[in-house]
Image 1 (cartoon, rainbow, N blue to C red):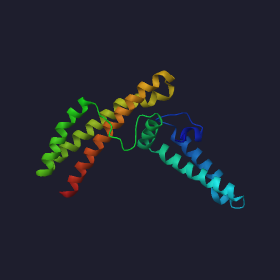
Image 2: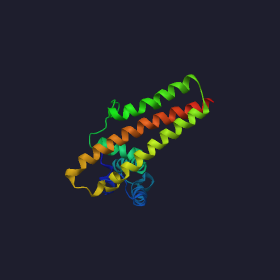
Image 3: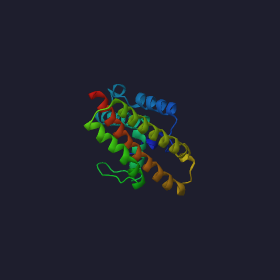
Image 4: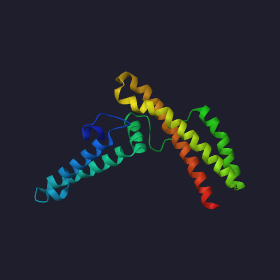
Amino acid sequence: MIDYFAFYGLAESFLPDEAALKRLYYAKSRETHPDFHATSSPENQADMLRQATLNTDAYRTLADPDQRMAYLLRQHGLLEEGKQEQLPSDFLMDMMDLNEQLMDLESAPDATAQAQIATEAQALADTLDAGIHPVLAGYEQLPGDHRPAALQQIRTYYLKKRYLLRIQQQVATFATRS
């Protein structure tokens, strides 16, 4: 897997300087845009096209917080595409109540219950975000031997957040049916 941070000469970070990332993206775009290499050799044109595509892919991934997090977790072998990831059992127990409320909502639509579930899911997501922010902010400064523990915390956060997002999407689906 290509190291997008190395491509831009940036340190690996969950919260990179977004303005610097954008500047680097535009600088690489000017360097590699195929139009600027129209008179060069076919090999060079093909290379510039590959570099321009890599630049676009790297920027899209690193500019989006969720994609960036998933990318970093995959880089460290902590997230596999298509694999069912195991969530902590205490979290799943907490989610049972929300899932039961969703099932009730499916069989008997109720705007008040729907709003309650949406509020509860958002509160849980906000609590998760607040709890992980210090880990994300401090990751770049961590010594190498402390990073694996931080990455595990971030992985757990990511999986929980994805689970809550699915619940929020289900609630939104019920809202559109009403």
